[in-house]
Structure formats: structure tokens, C-alpha cells
Length: 373
Image 1 (cartoon, helix red, strand yellow):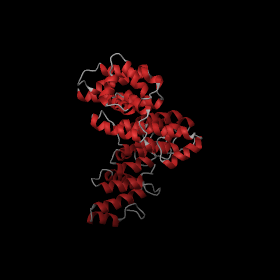
Image 2 (cartoon, rainbow, N blue to C red; image 1 turned 90 degrees about the horizontal axis):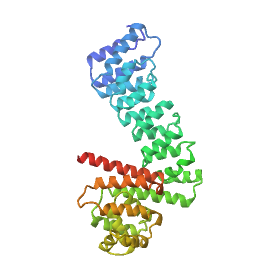
Image 3 (cartoon, helix red, strand yellow; image 1 turned 90 degrees about the vertical axis):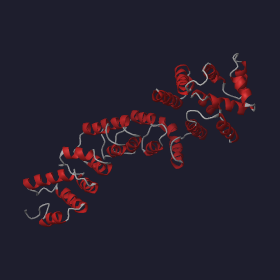
Image 4 (cartoon, helix red, strand yellow; image 1 turned 30 degrees about the horizontal axis):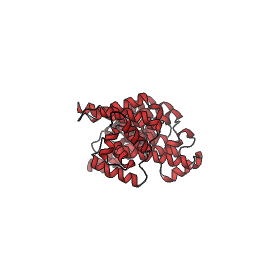
């Protein structure tokens, strides 16, 4: 082999004497580094390509990883080998997906559909991400990948893409903090970001967008309420709820917004406990008043609890549905029925985030029914 060739006779002898993974990994690194040297002859380049192809199939992870780390930037990497490495485990695929210039946008978009969130995040973190690829990541990428994309200054993320990302992952702190650090984020997203990010970033956002303190406090209250409703799951037993509701009342967190959101999500038992606590009456008395067929009892306890009048018709509709529910009826069916009706008839009462919460609540109920079936 000519002097200066990518493999010396010593390299060959070492591989023959020591075929261990460590020796093969060293060889992979050396071949990868030499692969782009212009002085290689045609025959040497063909041999190097054959060795790279063989090493990319090596059973030992450390060998494939060493190859990937040293060849990822090479513009002459054959597309077939690049594609194989891109579908390997993350330790091998990530350097190639993040740095290799051989992939087209179409190839990367196709890869998004069949690889892990780690693979997707590597694509989202490329030095330059086209607008088309950004759109595909926002629509099909997992949460970690979308958060990486929003933090990537080399990605031309548009306002509709930001909105789509927040709609898909409304409770993602990673996404919120990536957007909070991104320059030029429209002020329309400030309210949603304030409720997602850590305290230091929250103060930065409040100052940047000049959000009034009272409004910022309300944003945080609504976030806590939605988080609490998520913890309630698909219904808790009355004894457990009684202690929870009493504790919320002691802390001043049993707000009208929380009570009405719980009812809108089909949590009638929580609603009953809450009204009993707010009106300081026994639970059984509250239930009799709430489910009074004539409606006078419900109006009286609703007003005494201090709930807003504009929501009364909505609350009465849910109570009427609960009153007509057969004992032991499927809870998921009831939640779906309630959320569907409220989204159709009372959507004007809720803001965008609450509507999205109701839609997710309905979707979970539909999924539970399909699993049960």
C-alpha cells in the first residue's frame, strides 16, 4: 500500500493480531478521518468505502459509534450508508442526523415518521433546518424534538408553527422555555409562556411584554387549576375528594374557575363536594339541592356558593345530564357526552386554553371507551 495510505501495514497487522472491539473502533475512527483526504487514489477510496460499509454493520456498538462520530461531517459519505446509520440506535444515529450534509429534506422528513424522539431531536438540532422540515417536525415530532427546534436559531420557525407546537404540547415546560428564550416571539404567546416556564424566565417574560402583575397572577392560577384537574384523573372516591376539597378551601384555592372547570370536565362528584364546602352544608344536603328536579334548589346553592351567573345555564345543563345518567353508567361515556355538549353550546364561555383542555378531556374519554370495547 502506498505511503500515506489510510491503513498502514501496522494497522492491518494489529487487526489480524487483535480483532477486539477496541481495535476495530480505533480502525473505524482512522478510516473515517482519512476517508475525506483528497490524496487517496481511486482504489484506496473504493477500499475505504468498503471498510466503512462493513464497519457500519459491525455488531459492536462502540465500533459503529466511533465510525459515526468521525464520519458524520463527511459530504462524500455514500447515501446508503448514511441512511443505515441514521436508523441505528441513537448513539450511532444522532451525530449523523445532526451533522451529515448528505441528507435531503425529503429524506429527513421521511425519517421523522419512523424514528425515536432522540433521533427526531437530532434532526431538529441541525445547524440549518429548512422551513419545510420545520413544519414537518412541528406536526409530527415528539415533544423533545419540537422543544429543540424552537430553541434552534438556525430554524426559521414561523408564528403558525409556534402556535401549532403550543397546541400540541400545551403543558410542556421544555417547549415553553425554548420559546421564552427565542428572540422575536410574538406577544400573543406571552400569556401561555408565563404559565409554563421557570420563575427566572417568567420574570423576564413579564418584563419583556409588560404584563400587568394581576394578569400574570391569574395566568398562574389557571395553570394550577388545570394541573389539579389533571391529577383528579378519571374520578376519585368521595372520601378522598372530601379531604382534597377541604384542603383547597383552607388554602384559598377552591376558586369558582376550578369548580366550574371540574364540572365542565364531567367531575360531578368534585362539584358536589365543592359546593358543600363553599356553602358549609353537609354533602348529602348539597346533593339534594343540586339534583332538585324543580331546579330551585340548584339555583339557591349555586348562588350561595358565589359562582358566576353567566355560567349557570352551562352548570344546569351538566347537572341535568348527570341526573339522567343511569346508576353505574360508563364514566367515559358521560365525560364524552358532557364535553361534547359544552364545546358545542357553551364554547363562548371559555378561553382558548380551556377549550383545548376540554378537547383533550373528551379525547381521553373516547380513547377509554375504545380500550374498554
